[in-house]
Every structure is written in C-alpha cells, then in structure tokens.
Length: 573
Image: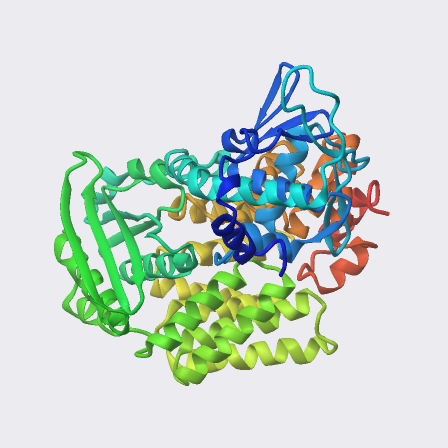
C-alpha cells in the first residue's frame, strides 16, 4: 500500500491504538530534522530558544517528506495525501514548501533541508532522527524506518483530528492580504440614490466533506451570475471575505452539505449597515433537485431585494443553462480544474466538460469551457498542431454562442479564444457584448485590460483592471498579474511588484507570474531577488527561454516584447 495515501494513515490509526499519544508524547521520543525539533500537535518547530510556527498543511507535508527522508516524493503523491478529496492546484503544495523553507531558514538555490527535483517533486535532504526521550539520555541515532513511518501516521492523524479545526477557523477569520489595487470600492449610498442596490455574494461554505468544495463554490458562483444579470442590482464577488461587507448594502452567505443523495443548503441575507439578518432559507431536498433548489434560492433572494427588477428578468432566473444535474456536476468539476491553470488539470477539465456535454448536448457553458481547454493547449505548447488547437477552440466557442446567444459567459469564452489567436478586435467585440449582457462582469473587464497590454496600450489596461477589482475585490491571481504587468510596461516597477507579489501569493505555481516578477525586479535594480525568481521559473520549466515562451504568448506589441526580453535576459539568458 502507498504509505502516502489517506487509506494507509487511516488504517494505521485504527490498528495501532497504542501509538495514539502522538509524536512528542510518551510513545516515542520527538522527531528531529537537522537541529529542529518537530512538534506536530502544536504545529511548531523548535531550535534552542527559537520557535517557528507552521500551518497544519505545511506540517503534514513536512511529516510526509520526513517519512521518506532522502527519497524524491512526487508532487501528485503529496497532493493526494495532504489534500485528499479536494480539488486544488500545484500552487497549494508550492506555497507549503515555500513556508517550510522560510521556517527552516532554507535557501532553494543551495538547499540544506528541502531539495526540488525538477518535474518530479521534493526530497528532504536534512538528517532525520529521533530526539532525546529524557534528559541525560544518549544522543539520538537514526530512527528505524518502520518506527519513523509510524510516527508520521500518528502526526498526520493528530493534525486531521485537531489541526483542521484550527486551520478552518483561521482561514475564515483572517481575510487574505490585499494589494493596493483593490482598495477602491463602490459607494453603496451613491448607487442607491441612482436606484441600484449593491449585493455581495460570499463564497458558499462546504460543510463536512471537503470533496464537495467544488459544489459549494459552484452554487455560490452561479447565484452571483444569476443576480448580476439583473439591471437593478450591482453584484460584488465576495471572495475577499469580510473586507467586502462595507462595499455592499446587502451580503449573501450560504453553506452546502451533501449527504448521500440528500442536499442541504442554507442561505442568509444580511443588511451590512444594521447587521440584521433580513431573510434566510433552509432547504433539504434530494440531490437530483439541485437545479430547482438554485432557482428557489435566486427567486427568494430577488423577492427580498428592493432593486428595480422587471418581470422579464424575474422569469429569466428560472431558465437554467442545463436541466441535467449530472451535466451540471461535471461542469462544476471541470471549472474548478480549469482554474488551476496547469497542463494536467487542463486535460482533466476537458474530460469533465466532455462528460457534461454527453449528459446534455445543448449545454452552452460546457461547450464554452471545452473551447478554453483547447485554447490553453496552444499556450501550454501541448498540441502538435497549434493552428488546429486554436481552430477547434473557435469552433466550440461558436457552437456555445449558437446554442445560447444571451449568455455572457459564452462571449467571454469567445473573447478568450480570440485573444489566444491574436484576433484582438473580434475579442474586444465579444467582451463588450458580454458586458452589455452583464454590466457587473468583472472577468470581462479584466480580460479587456489584458488585451490592451498585449497590443501596447498598458495605460489603457489599468482603469479596466481597477474596475474589475472593484467589481470583484477578491479577484484571483490573474487580476493582479495583469495589473502588475501593465505597471511594468508603464515603467512603474514599484506598483508592478506590489501586484505581481500579490499574484504570486495567490498562485505561487504560475510560471507567467514568476517571469514578470523576475523582469520587474531587474527593472527595480534588485538583481539578487530577480535571480531567485529566475530559479523559480527554471524549477517549473527547466531550460526555460523567454524567446521561445513568447512564441505562443498573445502579445503583438513589439516594444513590449523587446522590453520583456531585455529585462529577463539579465537573469534568464
């Protein structure tokens, strides 16, 4: 059995009750990694008087690497073990490795603890031993492999039992740090005077099974899409958590729990000024009624909101994009995978989109998503025939438009595909149509901003990207990457670094972010930091060449391409 699998740790925990005291208890002397003593129960590393605190997931990664010290442990194995049943990207693991290196005082360029194995994973190269059980005991020697593995099992299960709750509370109570770019919010009072009601929709919470995160986030996201298409409402994406409440008059929160074939959904509407709960809805229905549940939620919320909403718009809420629950579930899985923006997840997303279309051949959003996976194949240089990949993406996006010409997501997909093929005028037309259909469509403003930079108009990008971040204060890493990129070409490395570092914090695995960070650091005359970013690029793509990378990069501005080549050549020859 794979020692890194969740099944192994569960079996070990059940069959070895004598060891449940955990590491650092009476069952075993403490674990040592180099000079550091590991305390999994407290998520701490201790060295003399020095203490370093770790997040639970980072501790789990460290324990797994310690269990196979000296061996290369694959990224997939680590992701499967630590984030079992949850759709996450490589960036989750990369972020944990970064935090471990920082806590240990390790240098990725000359590691003493964790070594990166290109295209494979990581290896713990520091000495792993058992510590001293009692004062005056002889110095520790290497622990027998079996005992070391047993300790890992206890540590991981202890974290799963205790640490997960702490992580959950911390993740909910501490909103992520936000760069200066998203500090400009709408004025709800001014909008109300204009007859527009502002509503923030926070991400819905998955209760119980982490494997259902994609479902909870999908339901919340689609509710936001429903509301944003109503002319009397200004809808703000609540990804940034509590920070968005002052930006909207009303805040919507919710939770989703799937228990076998039963689905439980709770939705609440709160007045952000008085903090009074104005409305709540609790539904417990068969999972097969998922789409009807969504209609009921949308209609119930609209009935409570005072915006000027026409009868035609109210009827539109009942028109779902698909009547197949199976198709919708495959679509949500595909969407979560695609957003990871990595080649392997792109292929997995494509398979899920195909399943969605098989379940409902008239599902326009699934066609649009499938089109984008083919466009990304071109960017990842995974297709032997680039022209064919882009042509296929265009065909699928056009099919989506023909099926549902009133869906703004379809036009966004058209804009995305045409951007990759460098047909910018057509891309802008598609995005403008998406905005006409949904004036609160943050992603459309963000992609418009990206196009302006591709064509050499970085100054024009910035207002569009600022508006995207006002509409979506919790905008993903791409918003900050695009804004940082625009500032770089505006010869403002300070603001470029603010936003690019925020992009890297949100997705530390993204190659493009590290390329631009290296360039911005060179522009800021910080050669040592630029070289570290260049190392991050090479870790993700050994033998990286900016010139080759630009072959499939949709930038037509010769001046910007030359500027990027000039900057990166300093550290990425």
